[in-house]
Length: 108
Image (cartoon, rainbow, N blue to C red; front, side):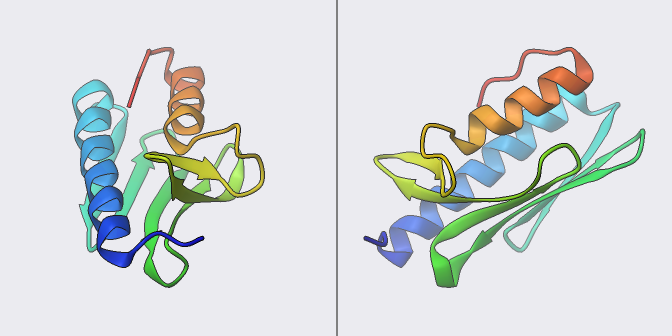
């Protein structure tokens, strides 16, 4: 069952904003984090780019990762759950990839 559009938009905007701020604060020298129009672009200084965007028609957040490829997340029970493996959440996947790459501990 799809979440109501206004609830989806609020949750997606809140996650993207929080992620941009956290990543910029923790990794500002290694990543250029830019949030514009519902699209969070993380450009790595070493090359590669994450693109994380809200996809309103499907009520999902989509992530393109240089480490894991493309993935989609539904908002359910207050969490962004992977459509492939609901045991994985967007914050934990993103944090694990950035933690592995930069040796930091991020928690969204």
